[in-house]
Length: 248
Image (cartoon, rainbow, N blue to C red; front, top):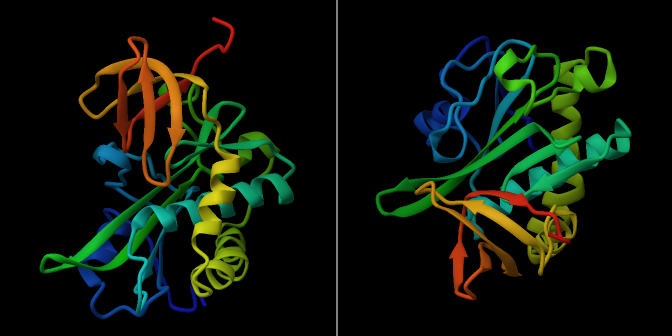
């Protein structure tokens, strides 16, 4: 089960980095949980603020057969966090493409999936989850981020929450879909819960910081296809996307 092998660290640079440095000797479904990260990061290596009080952990997957594609595991944990926030805490989360969870339009969770290679071949996947729980947010982040403590008005047990997250991940998704080779079903559920739909007007900033406005032509399993204002179609595999007013 996910988390049967649990490594707890007081402080580490990054739980993803820890797993990438030790993956050979660690069994599949190992969870590395750090009370504090000094070099937590997200997509594009952006710094993820990870002080005491938040829930910062990574999970190692070594499937004997495919999939070894990180975004499948990112989607699984996106759905798990969504389920817990909505069903356990009566919040109204949304999944923001491609890997963030928002509540009241503020980021509460980021999820990062990375491949670990043996030579030129992917050997396993590590998924890092950063969830703002009891941690205080600096003033410069308060307009864009939130925490469970802010939303619920109380502190939560990090260990209990970690156990709940991985229990749901294993029983509601990993066994049901990944082990049963029905992984496409996870993508279908994920697509239904995304904050964007086909036809939506959006603004997207890509990795080159180019900002494009247009409409979503189609949301594919691993990329967005957007028609810009000139009618030209372009594919985006990542980026910072904002939903525009549908009525102009």
